[in-house]
Every structure is written in C-alpha cells, then in structure tokens.
Image (cartoon, rainbow, N blue to C red):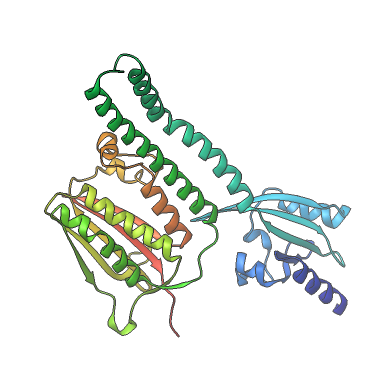
Length: 351
C-alpha cells in the first residue's frame, strides 16, 4: 500500500493534470488536487461516472480491468465556458484503474478560432473590398480627370478602409479573448476604479452629444469597494464598450446611468459575494426578438445605422466572452425606451 501511495504521488508530481484512481466498478479511491479542482472534492469514494459522464466510460474501465487495455476518451464539459479533455484510462495496481485527464481546450480552441477567423474575415471584408476595387477602377477610368468625384470617392474609400481595420482589430481581440476564456483571471481588482477610469475616458464624447453620465454607487460602505478577480484591460474594455454603445444609441440630451451594487444570483436574490454594474441608456427600445442575439458576432439590429456609427458588430460578442472568462453573467433588458446592460461578477471575499 505504501509503495502504491508513493507511485501515485510520483505520478501527481510528474503530470500537471488531474489524476484519479478508481476500483474496477468505477468508485474513486484516490485523487490529486487537480482532480478535486476540476470535478469537486465530493467525488471522493463515490462512483466517478456520477460526475464524469461518457457513453464509453464503463467499457473503458472493463477493458483496463479485464484486458489491461489503455483507452483514450474525448470528453467535453458544457458549462458557462466550454472545456475539452482527453481522458486516458489504464490499469494500475491490484485491479485498480488510473485515469489521467488532459485539458486540451486551448489546443482545440486555437484550431476552431483560426478556422472561424478566416471564414469571418473572408465574408465580412468582401463588401468593403468590392467597394474599394470599384472606386479604384472608376478613378482610373471615367473619373480620372474629375476632381470633385476624386475627392468624394477618396473620402468613401478612406471610410471603407477604416471599417476594414476595425473589423480586423475586433476579430483579433475576439480571437484572443476566446482563446483564454477557459482560464479565469486571478488578479484582485478594484471594480469601482475600473468603472471610474472608463467613464473619465468617455465623458467628453458623451458631453459632445449633450449627454451626462451619472454614477450611483450602492455598494455597501461596510464592505469598502467591490474587489473582483479580473484582468484590468479586459474589464476596462467591457465597461468602455457598453458606455460607448450607450452614447451611440442613446438619445442626444439624455442621461446615461451607471450603477454599482450588490449582485443577484440566478434565483434573483441579492448575494454579498457578487458585484453588479448596470449601464442604462435612454433610446429606442430593442425588440425582444433581438435581445438574445445581440452578443452574436456581426449581429446588428439596424445594420445601416450601426455601420454609419462605426460599429463592427463584434463589440458585444467580445463583452460576452470577457464576462464568461471572468465567470460572470451578462443580462440585457429593454423596455419603454430604456436599455440596461447588467454585468454581474464574483467578488473576492474578505476574511
């Protein structure tokens, strides 16, 4: 037994992966810290297939126990963030079976993101490239000596080139966030400071539309400031994007409300371990049929208006994936001309 324990400990040090020992019926006998982190400490001394469901799992256990066969299974966990694993199942000691769970999320994500990036770029850039080609041909032929047409066309060409640049920048940002989505950030951040810095950067733009950004801080004073585990640049991008949208789509002369408060759980009850930021603008009501699709890449409620305002259709997709990476929730509501984007994030709890 001592020798077996030593072997298990050696494997745990050798592999930076989840490792589990089960008996021939699949009941967990030993697990390392990585396995507990992945599946929860409650797996100890319980049937593993209660927590790791796969149609071929029991067959793989039987093959390891009876024939000494090593089997690899592909396994996907569909939670808030998708994660992909390869499970290697092999015989161990005294009829026991060892499982090593390799996290291959990054590997598969990179392949998928590269494929989607190429498809998105080729589709979305076709229109501005066609427009640019048409204007260039016109300037080379019929409008070659037309000064007024040249000035007008060059302005349009510059606008189309800028749109292509925004599309590429947005797609690169989205690809980066998606690739890291399964790795939650660990830095402790003052959420209030992130919000205040984003507002400071956008106040002038809001005032140019005669709009005022009004901040309401309802965070309990006894708890100081809301502190979350996060990436400062990414959370700043989320708040900046949502306030920027509020400026773009809110009515001139209206108020943009930014509220910081205790968050609600999925049961809608307030929880002290959650912080919520709400960004509310006064503008056109967004139809119910659009709300669930706003975070899809390239989805626009009004395509013409969005393009005229410089929208790429990627901003809210980026917001969604950043919030997912922070293990938070994004909720969008729109009623009677008031649209609210609500971000709820888990807090760092003080002892």
